Length: 153
Image 1 (cartoon, rainbow, N blue to C red):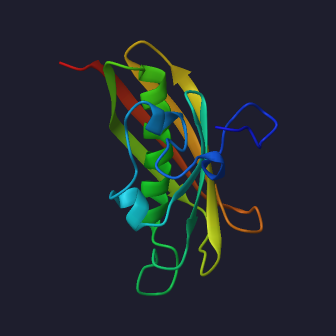
Image 2 (image 1 turned 90 degrees about the vertical axis):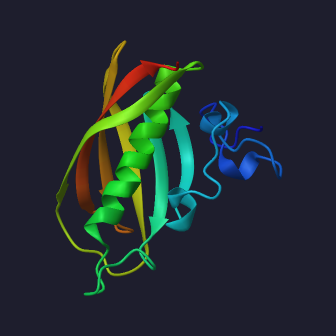
Image 3 (image 1 turned 90 degrees about the horizontal axis):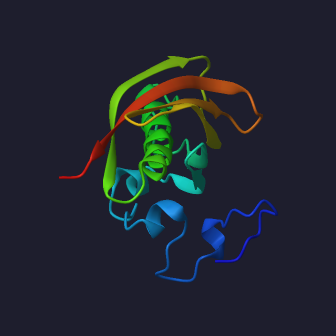
């Protein structure tokens, strides 16, 4: 893949058809056919210590027309779990054991972007703070995820 970010991180747009779009897929995992795809989440970057993605508000709302809080949590847990899997590495698995979220404001249209940042990368656990923001850069949700890192057996 070619680096278009200037930071040594290949982006999804750099991958040829059928090729891994980021390091998570290079480990043999796919987002195709999953809830990630169904919600329209577009993963932009994944590394063990950080991850970024965006998700459309349309199709992810509650009956009042606002972005569903659960959709924000899905976005947050997706990013943290993907980063934790890269931290775990081949032959190990990362599984979420705790997630919490504070919803700060509603969003009715556009996209939300999420940035995950590692808080702790240990031998058996990995924790992340994930900030979800609207198109204007305003914080919509702050989430925290802890994953357990296990040997695959």
